[in-house]
Length: 159
Length: 108
Image 1 (tube, rainbow over the protein chains, first blue to last red):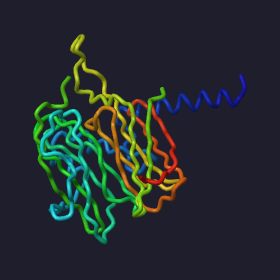
Image 2 (cartoon, rainbow over the protein chains, first blue to last red; image 1 turned 180 degrees about the horizontal axis):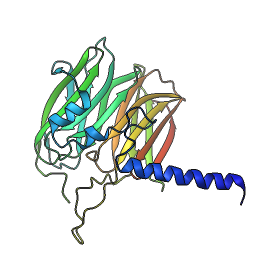
Image 3 (cartoon, rainbow over the protein chains, first blue to last red; image 1 turned 60 degrees about the vertical axis):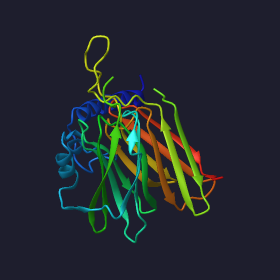
Image 4 (cartoon, rainbow over the protein chains, first blue to last red; image 1 turned 30 degrees about the vertical axis):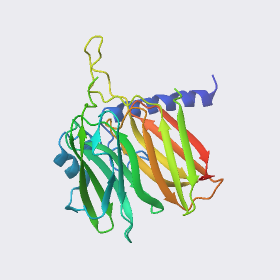
């Protein structure tokens, strides 16, 4: 067996162990790796808790600058298209978060945007039941919040 | 394990490149029960997905299990040129990953 193969096997074992630790919720230091995942916020089980863990600061009313591109009624809660757009302004938008109030884990998605990105994101999410979908947007002047109610006729969390 | 993935990038006349991503993935929440024996189906979902234009990361996403099965993502950025590369990479909670590079085309 040559040395590079041994080295590869050793590295694989270490990576495997790190992966297991990561999956177990350890090694969750913000900025610690190239792939951050905000375990605390994603595992929060209430909307307020998720927002607190995500922001930790005052959240302002963003109804005037945040626009939803989403249906008022979704027949299938398993696939609800949600678009969040921040109206054109001079301020750079650095992140957008999408949360669903009545889901078991309200935080659905979090996006970090490069200054060249247009502040507009579209994803499909699961919704357990009729509820407000909440968007949080971070700009240079602070964090803004807006919401949009989607009526769900068939929930998307069960089998 | 390779999972089918599609990446489309199209530049419009206003200088904005639209990136459309589709990944074949179950996005299991970990809260669903098996219909066979009632046991919980383990969570298996994409946690990170990044969109790069050349070397620049235009979007870095963190996803929870609430993102739908076979996820789709649209994002938009300025500064793209027809023929340049857009690369989308994803990583899930079980250590699987995938990546695909497409060239920017002119939008219709």
